[in-house]
Image 1: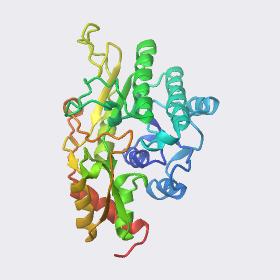
Image 2: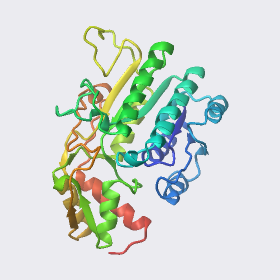
Image 3: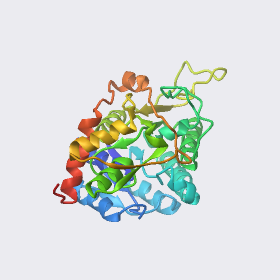
Image 4: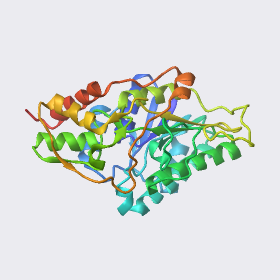
Length: 336
């Protein structure tokens, strides 16, 4: 099939594009290659990971005319929207960037899918939508009315916007709530990258909530495998859905939301120990309070994902960390 991926120079998008290309799909991309983090890493994902096999449009999702031009020219059958302004903490200081990219940009994707009669829209949501929810593990049937950051609020908004288009235009939409994705070619603003860089350079790492954090770390290859299996499985209407007892994860319209997590939360200090084990060095640690917008624990219920695509993420943390550090040391040509 012809697949349009937004965020192709991003962490997950570049890995996904590579796999879909290898599987024989025709893939085109959209990525504005902004400077939220080092541009060279984004360009090298396109150049080194994808080896110039991909046609990428360097445009902003919020530019309606340019997005529609791509849809009209390429006529994709499947759209996978991974482009977004990411980061919980960044949203505290730069709120407008999230509205521009995550709201205005997403409505352009929805409009493109509507007018080109796209067969399947898959889009990135986030585990952050669970916000103040303390029921564990997080289930897609849980209420998500109490987000703790603007980033989370925009991701919940995406799910609501998607449902509207599923209802109005019979557009199949599948939202994926990612849980702390990590692995080779990862983002420099995320914990694994920051911790590894600091420990290699004998610098202290900031350990939030005094180490009392748990995350459902999910290896990037597991994320990509799940998305790959959903490419030819557009969302279906749920005939058992009831408006008197509505299930938030499905609908009478062709709409579905999944968690994609490892279903095995890891304590932050265990995560740090996995990095220390691989590097053979002990981290210097600055213990700090929980930051605004952060949640102390994430834990994904992935039963419906396993049921529907016969796949459950299960890469263990030490294996995933080892793979990232091998990539990091090679990419930056570091000798320990």
